[in-house]
Structures are given as structure tokens and as C-alpha cells.
Length: 320
Ligand code: ATP
Image (cartoon, rainbow, N blue to C red; front, side, top):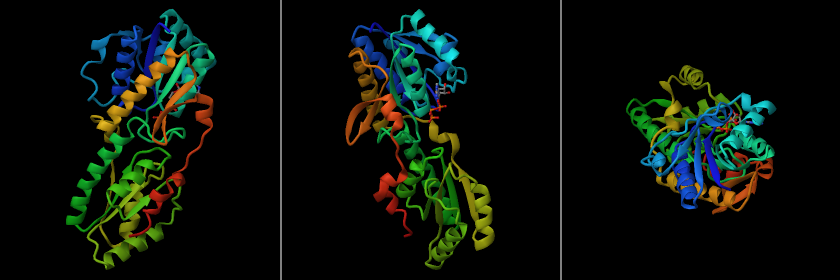
């Protein structure tokens, strides 16, 4: 391996910059050249490639987002797009690529590996919805951001003795909702993996809480369930308790990465370069059972995980 490329793909996540920095600095320390690919797989197809040196990654460890930009590339889903991307790599002498992104981006990395380019994936998504790993870059920052925002909603909710539905991100996965629900001491947590659409149960719980003297009722709703505004309207009509919906939205994807995201992303970035230097390809770096490990991408994508794997945490959701 002489030249390594690095790209970010899919949804951005805080911690992608520390990962990029670690890839660049580790590779340079090993005497390799490094190229940055802009805008995910699109940049490989349209040849948007930059040379990276130590300064390219100065002053970015504390920044959210990704200095390389990110994208979802339709063209890369096609065989023709994948061939174009591989040609671009060869033209630039890139013989190894680190792809930072979610499951979809790993599928892309698999395709690139099949074209003869060595690829290593790093799990980058705030959603924590990658089966092979207990940690994904960005999750810790996102849950901390959401937790702080929910604390603020709680204050005003208590003052006005309201019911508040706060919708957090996570796509079809409920990990952000589960963690925030526990961290914020929510009265109810709605997880897409488990919610049975029983609004009456929610309404009864709110009324019971009011009878016990609760000043607010916090419901953490997951993006995968959605419809928070309609839910708030129906709850207010049924209970007579003022109910508001707050959708936290994209703020959860931004902001300075937490210490954990900076450190884990840095370790993973360095490990990706080590793997490429060992001649490995079609692998992903993961954090499993307290250790940084790597798996074959095919194996990683075949794994499954469900919120029920977090059985003990889920059990904390039971009505208080
Ligand atoms: P997030 O979970 O944050 O959305 P992701 O990596 O799962 O991240 P996707 O949009 O699913 O996001 O994938 C990112 C990009 O990876 C796609 O736009 C596409 O270019 C590429 N990709 C996804 N699936 C495939 C596939 N089966 N074959 C080739 N490329 C793919």
C-alpha cells in the first residue's frame, strides 16, 4: 500500500472529523500518501479528490460534521458507477480506501473491494443501528445533545404542568430514544421496535401520573414512529392536559464531538490504516464486548441486532 484514500458517506455524524484526522495522521506517520475524496462515493465518480497533508486535518478534532462533505450517491449503486469509481482510484494511485459511514456505505465498500480496491469501513452514524458493533461514531454526541435539549423542554414542561412529546432521531432504530428516555427520566419511551400504537395506554398513563401529582409527563418518541404533532393533539383532546410536541431534528447531527466520540473515532481511524497496511480488505472496524475488533464486511452485514438485545435497558422503560 502506497496511497490511502478516505471518504465519508451517508448521513454525517459528529466524530467523523476525528476519524479522518486519525486516518491521515496515521498514514502519514507510516510514510504513505493520503488523498481525501469529497462528497462520498460521488467524489470518486466525479473525480473530486484532494491531496492531504498534516495541515489538512489541523484544528478539526473538535468540529462536528465532516470536512470531506458527505452524500448519498445513486450512481454508485450501479455497476457502471462502481467501475468509474475504481478507475478514479487507479488513476490517482489509491490502493486502499477507508469509508466512514453506515450500513449502506459498507455495502458500497464491499462493491469497491470487488473492483479490486482494498477497503476498510468505519461505523459512522448517530443511529447506532449497525449490528456488528456496540458503538458507532457520533452516537454518543447525538444522545448527549438530545439529552441536554430534553432537559430544557422538561423545565418548561414542569412550569406549565404540560405533557411533552419529544421526537428524537434514529431512523427505524430506537437506540437514541432508549438512551435519552433513561437519561432524561421520561415517563414513556416509544421505540419503533416495540411500539404497538396503543395510544389509549399512553393516555391512561398520563392520567394516572396526574392523579399521583406529577407536574409533567415526558414522552420520548422515536423518528421511526413519528407523527408526534398528531399524537400531541389527540392526547390533549383525550386528557384535557396541555400537550406539546417538539421535534429535535438535525441539531442532533451537529456539534462538537464528545470525548468518547473523539477517542473511539481516533482509535478506529488508526486501526483502519493498520489493517490496510497488513494487506487486509473488505473489512470493517467495530467495537464489540469492550474491544476494538474487525470483521469481514459480508459477515458484518449478515449480523442482526435488535433493541431487545438491550434487554435490561429496555426493562427500565416499564412505567414508574
Ligand atoms: P446512514 O445510516 O447515516 O444513513 P448509510 O451509509 O447507511 O448511512 P446510505 O444512504 O444507505 O447511508 O448509503 C450511503 C451510500 O452508500 C449510498 O448513497 C450509495 O452510494 C452507497 N451504497 C449503499 N448501498 C449500496 C449498494 N448496495 N451498492 C453500492 N453502493 C451502495
